[in-house]
Amino acid sequence: MKILTTEDAIKTELIEKRGLSLIPTMGNLHSGHLSLVKGAKKYNLKTIATIFVNPLQFGPNEDFNRYPRTIESDIKKLEKIDCDYVFIPEIDFAKNLEIIKAPSISLELCGKNRPGHFDGVLTIINKIFSVILPTKAFFGLKDYQQFILIKEFAKVNFPGIQIFGLPIIREKDGLAMSSRNNLLSRDDRKVAPLIYESLTWIKKNINKLSNEDLIKFSTENLKKNNFEIDYLGVYDISNLKEINNFKESALIAIAAKLGNVRLIDNIIITNDNT
Ligand code: PAF
Image (tube, rainbow, N blue to C red):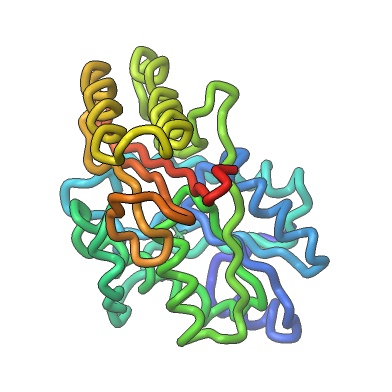
């Protein structure tokens, strides 16, 4: 695997190569990220992962400084699964960029308590896409809102890039894999799977109870177990507005804090409840 650290290196190394599959990450790689690289490799294109903890997507009181940075082991993991390139730029990669204003969907769900977060994501994605110009780009569906914003952004600004959303990878106990899981205390780690249990419980009962009751009971249960809920609800899969009556498909999504660690998760359901 070739390690590239500058835009110039990207230009010289990749100029002749069209048809790259891109996997943008912020590092601290786990099986969720690696599943994106493996998914990308199925298309028989060269794969390029990026590792960059993007300061533009963290609010002033968020965890930019303590976001886990594990470059050495990330490189080893990527090498092991035959990723072709990794791009690890310096912090000034995010300097002097024109900030992309994310559309109104960015104000729902995570956007409510993280003002500017998705502007920061789209701004860095715009930069990464412009530098690498991949043919395909792969993202995890755990960040569902991010996924639909990037998909819409690419449709207009990078129509040549096909955007893929790949399934959430979970720990054995159901907890969605996330770099932030490493920040949980031992006790909090034990109760963290309740997030996924709540989502599956809502899915199971979606045709039996009102959405209001589903959310009320789940919220009570989570609060009893020390979760501080940012949002929990049943949402339209396209515009992310809360829906009261489940019809064909929906996104059940949550963001909640345990200690000072913010976790998100979701499941998408369809009318046959599969
Ligand atoms: O999902 C992430 O890790 C980040 O938001 C991304 C897409 C790499 C942009 O910094």
